[in-house]
Amino acid sequence: MNQNAAEPVATTETLAEVPEHVLRGLPEEVRLFPSAVDKTRIGVWATKPILKGKKFGPFVGDKKKRSQVKNNVYMWEVYYPNLGWMCIDATDPEKGNWLRYVNWACSGEEQNLFPLEINRAIYYKTLKPIAPGEELLVWYNGEDNPEIAAAIEEERASARSKRSSPKSRKVKQKVSGSSEEWEVTALHLLPWSLLGEDVHGGVSGNSCSPPSAWVPSW
Image 1 (cartoon, rainbow, N blue to C red):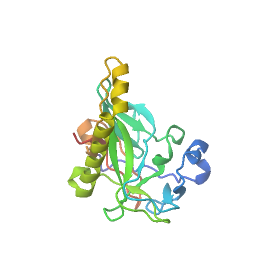
Image 2: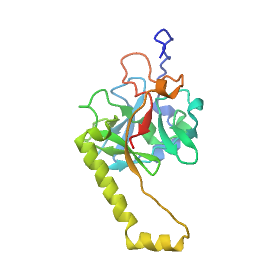
Image 3: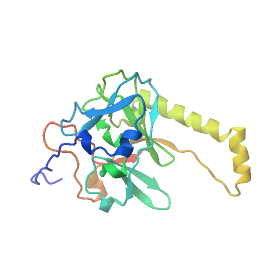
Image 4: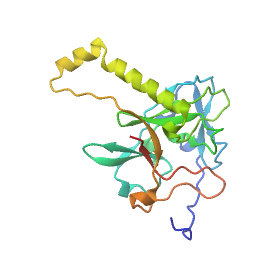
């Protein structure tokens, strides 16, 4: 990254700018209010207790090539066998859902969500109980974190159980050539510099900027 490059100008999000479809899609446990970790952004706050292990998603956005992404604050990257690496970009609020407004934790102590990929879709899962009045904050840890590794294995076990259920076997018998596979992976960091792209995220000031880019850990 060019250290002499001009810093991106921070624009302040407002609740009035949140699209109606985002508000309608909010789970009953959360609401949108100004973020505590980044004064320029809206955040997602718990209004009711949220149990550990609660899963939200999938993350919604435009599917783009890396070269089309101009900002990595509101995006994830997913590998599709037929398309290669594609970015799920929710920079435009009209293209995303409420998960777009979940901000990055500034520390491991603040983190209460972690991301995981299930069948090429990104979900957020609670790492610990979240009390009313707490902001939902995500960060990547990968399976090096024992709690996240256990949660990932739990998802894999659930996927295996669904795959082997009598109902699933009947569906597969009816669909000729069906090869439904459940893939569950953690996510970790891959710098944009390794991708050969000149894309910068985050904003100036004391905000918690996101990692540069995200890929699943195979």
